[in-house]
Image 1 (cartoon, rainbow, N blue to C red):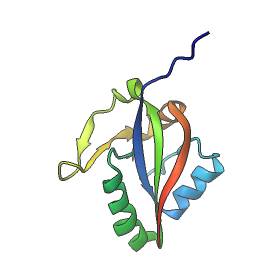
Image 2 (image 1 turned 45 degrees about the vertical axis):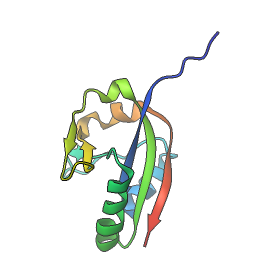
Image 3 (image 1 turned 180 degrees about the vertical axis):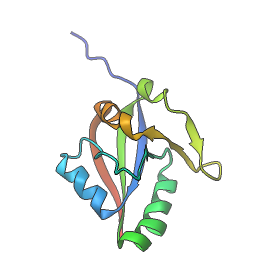
Image 4 (image 1 turned 90 degrees about the vertical axis):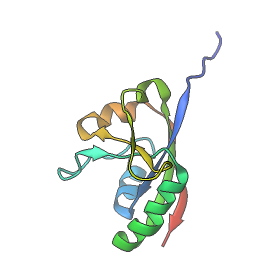
Amino acid sequence: MPVTSQATTTLWRPSGPKELELVRELDWRAWPPRLPEQPIFYPVLNEDYAVRIARDWNVKHDGAGFVTRFEVESGFLRRYPVRQAGGQTIVELWVPAEELDEFNAHIIGRIELVHEFH
């Protein structure tokens, strides 16, 4: 039986140490539920943008910043419009907190830690 490969989209997520620890606890396969004051989960579509947030914001506010990379089924992501949060390369998806479990179910493989800043 032939193996079919599914199209995926690479996303990045800048995180602080607390969120990263929760991802570790989930075996690098899912994002933790949002807190009540976090109604949206914001993965970004550009590694440079994720690095800037982790390095310039997370380090200042949390003492450390991390960038993760992960793959999500492209067809599933079509439901989330790309939002431009600034310049042309500052783009992200807005995933409502109540849809995060379904979003996690469409992650292919593991979430990878790719950058660390202190």
